[in-house]
Length: 296
Length: 280
Image (cartoon, rainbow over all chains, first blue to last red; front, side, top):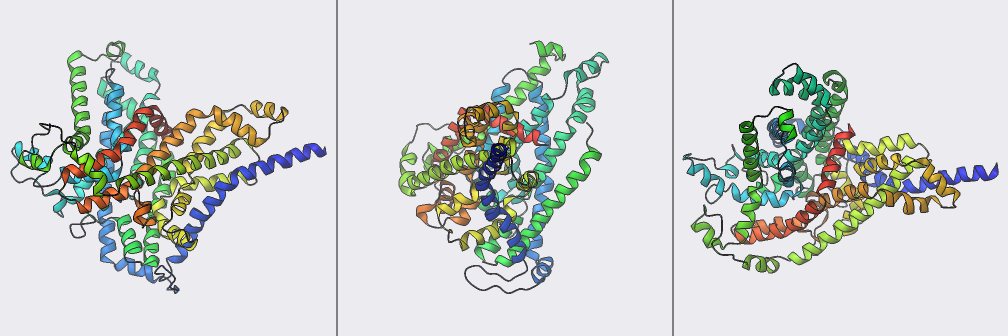
């Protein structure tokens, strides 16, 4: 009896000790900052050793009227609205195409996936040169095929955000393609067999079997791409630095500038709370809608 | 061949799809090809004939110059050191926690696990400002230690490893206990060696992420002697806007380690992505 209890106690101790390092790290570097951030957003904390004052909802009241913040939020929404459908479309098309071929599949999967693992900074530098309106190859190609006035890309406040979206789509569609490809390969073959017996065309098979069976995966990719689109920073920082003007300033970039360049920690903590709420709302909507929309 | 007949592809349509895919893959890889080609040319050559992408003669000076133009070697070493330390520690710490969740008794196990998993939903960006304050108050701003500590917890890693450890039969642990193994010994001598494929997936995932990390080093590392490759590249870009060849030689060198890791561990990459698909 005693020995048994002892071993029980021992297994409890072991489990606790095994989890302890991860728990301490989680508590100190994630949980405490989370709570601390909320508290900070109600102060005028400016970093360093200056004593912060409690300012109530002032930061949030200021946010609603802050043009710069609203512009960055608007830019981020435009980015999301372009990035999400483009990425999903490209990922789905390439996944379906890859699933339907026999040759070169491995090479093609690697080629499409490869940009995803390279660093944002490197590819942002490369694309910055590619997009150069005068000396970059993109406009040389556009001129060669007869477009006389190609866009000024990163130098133009109308085109810069679009250029960044294009690079982001190029970089990440392969990742979502691999997720979708795994989903497509999980669809039971007998569903297609019976459809073929009924004489359904390839397109109809895609429409009535692949798409509905893939809906849980598609839904997950939708949520992942949306959440991802609110974290864009590296491309903006390297390619445009938020410019020209404010035309590519996005949410995380704005938070970064306020916190680490202007040292308005309290104010940027309020912005961070907004970002946190956006992601939370998306996650809650995901939970709610998952059962309604997704057909299994 | 079998699948072609099975799904009634006619040959021309099949060839067309393959051709389109090949063209698309070359377009996808074009920026990398251009990057390599540009790194091997003089700037004069590049501006004289921008459409001529295949260099007439190989010009290797850029690769020599880049080491002296910025403290490239220092950045390289820093990145390598940080990436390896973080990968090793993160894999060990998260595997330990995952093993406890899968096989051991832990007080409030479910609650703690759910708490940990909130990390999967919550982007780091939304806590980076207060986290910076916490790290500064601990006196760890502008130190490698501070940067390492914030990276060691991974909800994804714990989830991935727990899935694997749960698939191990409990009889294995019981037999080992009867043989007098402590839980620590069971973890290191039995569970970890068996989980090599999952560990590789996890390690490769972390390695890639850390090698390419930009925003966290930007916030946490201020001294030149502490900076990483990504920060170095960014500073390099600001200073040498027009030295295309030099700039591209730098990005090629910074990308090579990732290419090697990718070619060696392609199947683990694919696995880690497929796991994301299963998470749902």
